[in-house]
Length: 450
Ligand code: GDP
Ligand code: MG
Image 1 (cartoon, rainbow, N blue to C red):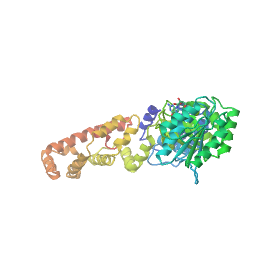
Image 2: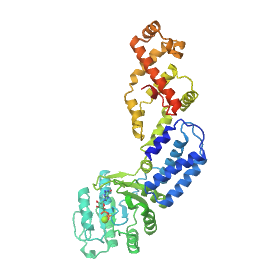
Image 3: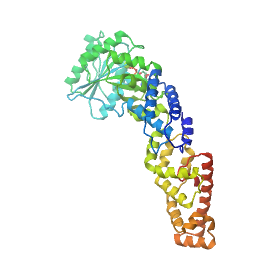
């Protein structure tokens, strides 16, 4: 997608309205990107349909070209489906807050229990982990290991360890009883958060779902987090729907986002269930854990670097009218003057932040290099020199002979060599601008002269 976008950006100069053809071309790219990112097919269909509708009725922006505008609509739509802003964890007004984890086996629930515990501990909470997965023989031990690493006590059914009762009486394996007892213990010991780990199966099944629902009814969670492996691909929709109906989760955690997964599952789950994504799990270590940001995920899904940030910053950074006037001038073959050159340099100086911005834009390495070599202090000297020229000299620098050159140098507090250098650079820039006008390149201010 990056390559395709780069070529789209070559047409940055393109002006005019959003035509149906422009929109359809860009929507096609977006569809491909979403399918590449493993967004479920029906979700892709619904999404691109909505984007197309919105683009067709969009107000045409002065600062963005049609492709950029469609991309912006796509991004806005993605961010909005992904929840707009991060939804923080909902904690109870009266502790303890109960957080229950649900999801398929291997989704990353137990790992997440530890991550969440560590995260909450870091915020000054005193979580208690409850091992209500009695399905697998080592599930309890696994949670205990995780708890130890997080420095958080674990309530487990088969033996007492720090902060837990010996519950051998119910060790026959009633996860609902364990959850209930765990909550009671948290109350008694004044833990302000209880994290209940539950069992999963490899596939959705009715028994599992019933068990999860029973645990839920026993502890009335403030938050039921559905943990889903980001690599699950097309199965995301069916799995998420099953858990939405089975336990009615309140939020989503995307796990294994450290892999190749491009996060298509995020869009599938969010769009099918309408539930917010709260966290992302990004590795096996307990610290591989992040608060989920819809805007970053949107970029990741579209694999655009932070293109949209760039567009937004660019919109603010330089006066669109000025850029358009320049583009029009070039297109009409009008001469590029020293005044234009100065204007470009000043724009360039204003765009000091562009260096960073261009780093975000795929395929913009060359331009960034140009900016790296750009000395902002030079602009003042260039300005002084050009201001010391007469209007006639600015219009036709060819007339600047030896005596004019010394007068300009004296007037600007520079040397004749400085004046010559400036004129050489200007000539180079002029040549470049002419080429760009012919070849349809990008008329970024200041680019020609470097
Ligand atoms: P559960 O069955 O849902 O409790 O899943 P686990 O927490 O036991 O995790 C299953 C496997 O996935 C374990 O090997 C974890 O180390 C691994 N895992 C969990 N979360 C992540 C993650 O965010 N990234 C990676 N790379 N591995 C993870
Ligand atoms: Mg587990």
